[in-house]
Amino acid sequence: MTSQKPKSHSTPHRPSQGNRDFRNRTKRSSNSSGEQKNMPRSTAQPVTGNATAQPAIILKAGREKSLLRRHPWIFSGAVERVDGAPLSGATLAVRDAAGNFLAWAAYNASSQITARVWSWREDELVDTEFFHRRIADALAARSGLKLADESSGIRLIHAESDGLPGLIADQYGDVLVMQIGSAGAERWRDAIADILQQLCNPVCIYERSDSDSRGLEGLEPRNGALRGTLPDNVEVMEHGLRFKVDVAAGQKTGFYLDQRDNRALTETLARDKDVLNCFCYTGGFSLYALRGDAKSVLSIDASGDALRIAEENLMRNGLDASRAEWLEADVFQALRKLRDQGRQFDLIILDPPKFAPTAAFAEKAARGYKDINLLAFKLLRPGGLLATYSCSGGISEDLFQKIIAGAALDAGVDAQIVHRLHASADHPVLLSFPEGAYLKGLVLRVGL
Ligand code: SAH
Image 1: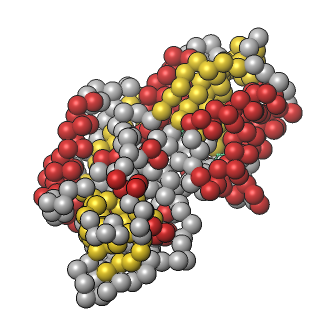
Image 2: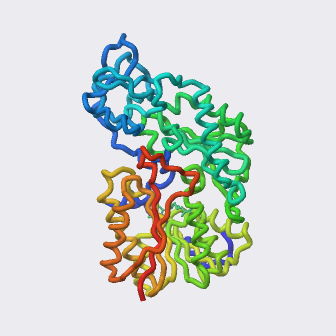
């Protein structure tokens, strides 16, 4: 903590209660590209077939359609039987009811997603060479983005969207953080680490396989160095700003790389503005706003650990601490307090954690989004800007816009969409896997 700031770390973080407990399900919240795999665990597992037959997953008649569209998940409800008594993590042929080959997929007996597709080609062997090819291709795609000048933090592997279901790899300088969220990727964990070591030569590969969703996949949490030793101080340089990354205990793999472009946009919007940054984590949007000459920046997060790093980040970058205020609080409550105090802002950022991991949570999540966005609209001066995000896989872009429209209506403001935003390009979305488009954002301007 620094002494310069009007600190309000006084409000202790209280766990959310009742129907709002989704709000704090943030730590280690993400898994693969999907951020969307928190499926309720199915009690009805697929029927075991002939134990001595060639291992295979046989689908029910007509249930091959999503696979023919190359969607990489096979849900338990689509499975007629599993032949050959395979173990979770094994690569099996998936066949339609008539026995035609559809895909090679990683089996998981404990998940509602019974299998995730590795390959659509019958002649492709899923072996170490296969992972070498897929990983090398993901790395080549990242090199093609030419991100190195703008950031030393890059998502190298984005799970399903890179043809590697359940596998995330993030680069923070010369450290790689790997996150495994599927039984298939778990089975190949050591081979994958070897390949990453060989192709990227990091000083450390650290494993953050401790997302909530691992439990739903029947996998134990794991957190520790896989190769090498984690340096004491890991940081990323993003658009010239330095951020400390808490690889071992931070959220996700330590940093929200997906918001890189949107943070940079914030800098261009902030000049001379009173800015409110809700769910600020380690200060990402706040630091950009300060460098963009914001008049003041009030940043709120429920995590004291994140706020301590945020303040450290501010000092690291030599930014003007007198324009920054940090508040440890529940955003839902803090927004109400600010409203009651009559506070007003020119730019408000709302980047909450995932409220709806799947569509099943959409209704409850919609209430949460509407609540904070309605309050934010009320806190904006006429002509003010709201930059609002959802990283919920279970909320489509269309639904998100509808929720925001409802919030504006109830707040009694007219608002226009100025920007439509998504995750940065190192988080690609596979056309056949729209769930990968989990992050969406809108910058709205309220009328005078
Ligand atoms: N915008 C950030 C990432 C935000 S992640 C960036 O660019 O880095 C979401 C954040 O919301 C986390 O830091 C988490 O601690 C915080 N959070 C979750 N629930 C909260 C709540 N109810 N009130 C305040 N903060 C909350």
